Image (cartoon, rainbow, N blue to C red; front, side, top):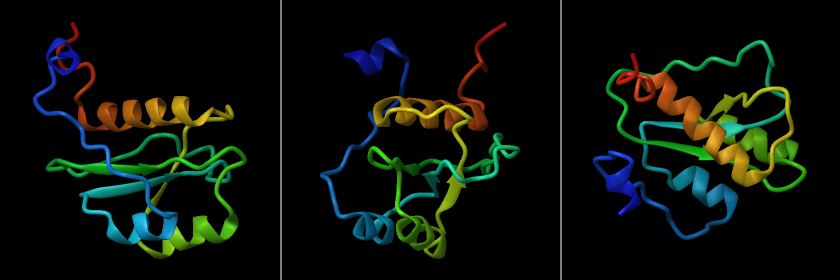
Length: 113
């Protein structure tokens, strides 16, 4: 019902939890991001391909990802994602990340005047 109220055309998939390394290696999406506080704060904007239909964002636990986890993700084609200068709780970080992706695809604001 909430999906219809928000005007979405399809329901996002939420998968069962996996160990981090498995999730990175098994992802099936157009783009993958990892939120990380050490990413260059000057690079806040993201660009996405025009034909994107799926994305995954890895949000770390309290205290963030370890250096080894972060490097593992980068080595496996995951792109760093800057969520700004504030330290965010996991549930807030996920909403901010989703908003950044929607904004980059033009899905936000295309109906605003």
